[in-house]
Length: 205
Image (cartoon, rainbow, N blue to C red; front, side, top):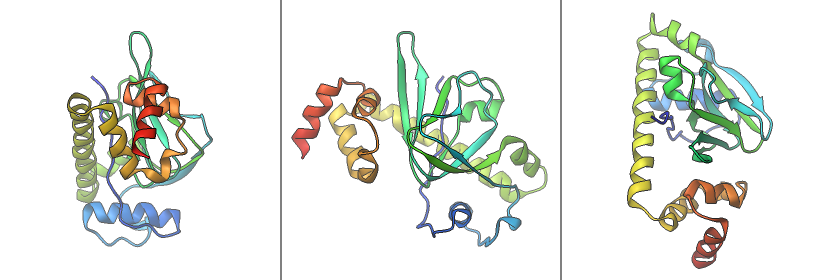
């Protein structure tokens, strides 16, 4: 089974990268934390250069990542090729979430499509916080729920929408990022040839 992933829209972020995740946390839990010292688990910053792996195939996922800047792609191997499952953008969370939950090797790979800056919550820190914090438990539950919803919506779109409809939706919601994603990768994500994507793009512009 494909690993579900997490994505929750964040309220408008301020310039501080630390504040960005805190505001995300507050928006999810309806809290009013102002500094990371008041969070039930530590959050660390990290950077990944374009093309680098965040989580590799067969690795046990040890963190969830909040994207401050950049674009992340998630891929999975099929019997003949590698397929792009999803893209993740600024102010979204991403993880090989099934592996994060069951601590078994993942069947997906997460990599930086462009230079990325993320905030990281380690699995061990979150599990430790579960033992003593109701807020941490709520946060983890909400991550799991939204991960399932995103996975379910993605699979429903694959079954009910054409490639053109999926591209138009992507263009409308992520227009600021489209130019940073190579055409061949968008085509692979949509399951069509680059030439077909070019025709779709000409049709809607």
